[in-house]
View: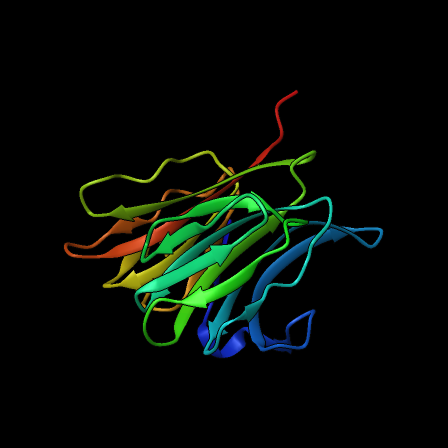
Amino acid sequence: MHIVIQPEEFDRQPWKNGGGVTHEIARVEFDGHLHWRLSLAEVAADGPFSAFPGLARILTVIEGAGLILETPGGPIAAHSLDPVLFPGSLPVHARLIGEKVRDLNLIYDPALIDGAVRLVDDTHPLQEGETAALFCLSGQFGLPDNEIGPGAVALLDPGSPAPKAEPGATGLYISLQAASD
């Protein structure tokens, strides 16, 4: 089974720290505990990131040159389409490289979920049998009864057939597997 979520269906909400806006795409939580959340953020100015203690974060810049994430351990470069993983509790002050950016964020509980994000296209087939999401960056990805166009997200369960990339299509594949012991 799969669910396709269009950009106009994303839930717009203020950042946890009040410094901007995020567009929540999907989240899974049980008894008030977040397992994972997928969202898009618009970063128009330098500033601090919200803290997510106990969670991990994978940030992928999808528009713009990127960000330099200033942390106590040194800077982390977040360049376009290059996913970066860091603890959600890490104090981060973001500095824009050039103009504003949009980034895709996977925030998850690493005790429960092994999260990963990778760039996919028509030359790298997607895996079947995983709990995952696909964010379409360009072109089209086909499913048996639907298409995933630019900006849309498909949520896939292990029984879902893998989306097929049309020639020239690119996307971000977000793997959400149960954490290994």
